[in-house]
Every structure is written in C-alpha cells, then in structure tokens.
Image (cartoon, rainbow, N blue to C red):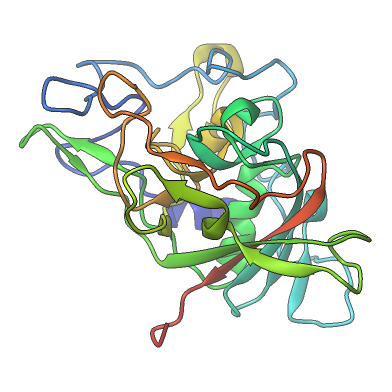
Length: 277
C-alpha cells in the first residue's frame, strides 16, 4: 500500500532536526519553540473544516488497482492526478488564481493560500505525493531547523521541473502548450529563477481530537509547490526564505504578462530532472 511507502520514505525528523512551521529568529530564520507539540491540522492558518480525514489505508490510493487506461504504465488517481509509472512524470489539474502580485507559494490547495499563489488545485497533496512515488521519485525532506548549529537545513530531494499547460480550448486542447512555471515568476533581486526539489512534506501524529493515526501535513497546510519556506511543502524551493517579512523581505512576484487570466484551467506537470539536464 502507498501508506506503507509514505511511512518508509517521508522524512519525519533526524537528530537535531525539527520541522519549520515558521522561520524567524535573531539570525534571520526561526526555530520552532522548544517543546512545541505537533501542529493541529484543525488550526492551520487558512484551513477550514472541510479538509480530508487523517491518512489511512482506506483513504490512500491503491496502486494495486489502478483505473484502466490505454497505457498500462499510466495510473489515474483521485482528483484527476495521473502518474507515469517509473517515468518521473505526474500531472494534476488546477486553475490560475492570481495574475499579478507577490508570491509565497507557486501552487496551493484550494481554501488555503490562494492570495499568494499562481495556481490553485482541488487535488489532495498526499495523492500527488503518492503519484510521485509511483512515478519513481523518492522524497527527501522539507527544510528544518538544526538546533545544534542554530541554522536552517535546506530542503533535499530529487530535483524536479514544473510546467503549466493551458490553451484557448483548454489544457488538453489542440492548441495547448506547456510553459515553465519558473518563467511566470521573477526575483526582485534579479537573480536566477527558483529551483525545486521533491521534499515530500511530513507525516505527523494526529492530535487527540482526530483519534489514533497520522496526518499528512501538506493536506492541511495546502502547500504543493513552495517559494518561501513553511517546512511543510510537497515540492520545496531549494533556497530557504522565511515567509515572515520582518525576517526575509519578499522577493518572488508574478512576472508581468506571463500568466493567463484568473480562472484559466491548467494542468500542472511535474517531472524529474534527468542527470543530463
């Protein structure tokens, strides 16, 4: 079962390493408060009570019984998520949510961070995570805080490229084209475009109100593709930057004229970067 894969591959902490719900301290980044308890998914900012139930074998995709497709190496999962098995490619649907403005994330789940994201999706982060596993990618870990050195630990994982497909007759129409997500973003510092890794978010023990088990943090926080560092991203920007403007000033914004109109349906394409690339 995919849940077993998640348990074995998703990083849930290392010695002197803790997750980063915030990134602010006197050194420019923030460690979590000492002795803090796991985040209660019912209280994550921007999350409403309609979010999914805790992860269980019943709610995770079952790779042993994929829907039939014309290509046996393609598996369709819930919410329009599609995995090319062992080919390092995953697709899921979304829509444009912003045309201009500053960004903290690039892709988010609906009802979470639309006010600071280019694309919003109804897909569930843990399902996209499972699709990336089926596509042959192994997650690393989101950014964390090294208590021994009082410094951030950058996210790790296989490098991925992200494209957005859209067109006048829809993302699968004959005139649709794929545009690099990074080309829609500019850095106010006039530096290179963001680079991303499959970090894999985190599993956390359920709070008492949810009963026994664990939950997938990104399902509640909604961070599919990050730019600033929340520490819960499925796909994380390699550069560690705090979302707290008093710590790190905003640098990521939408490039003028690079994004189609708000509400445009799109397909988000994630693919593994080959060694040659």
